[in-house]
Image (cartoon, rainbow, N blue to C red; front, side, top):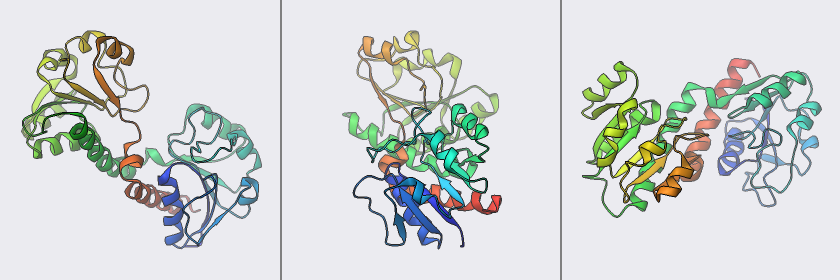
Length: 290
């Protein structure tokens, strides 16, 4: 492949992305990974990001691309790079490929006339990303509870990509699985799979019996009234992106154990997560003619 990418530092996934793009035969520049990045010999590392921009066709920002809407998300580096400065320095032929692009970042791209594509919105990535997310959630449940998943009463809130796979995995491990959904079609599929179906609006009736509650819905479904029905020895694992699905302040007041498990793929399976992102970037670059 005759493409040239500039990969900005993120977590371990992003190091793997840089290395794997090089494996595909792409020319790869990298920066923002701190002092000791584990980059392959085929990746050219730059201390100055402005120098690294030269000759590249696409700039790859991490997932998420920013945590403050202003600077590039580079947890492995002490350097701070303003997204506005990056966009201003790019030429009209260079594009941005970024993960979880916020509205503010999109507006900056529009202001500087930079084309930006959000690879986190790609269906192939979100579907495949569900696998390490689910494995990480199961790992957390095993580590944080004194009982086996087999025989445990588990509630999965939401029946999207992650909810479907999580319910199936817990069921295969012998858990007693209840899954919630809003749509009647999803409730029907839940029943067909052999799980107990519950309307999301009626989960308060189910909660008192649960040992572990997994949330995948990115809005508050476990409010104070719902949390008041959670058993003191139960565990809540919130897999939803911000703002999450739990009233965390209320949970703390009630003494309920909650784990907000953000970015699990990058934590539990950085190589697999990096491969998923890399394959998505290559597909996206091909479609955009980069």
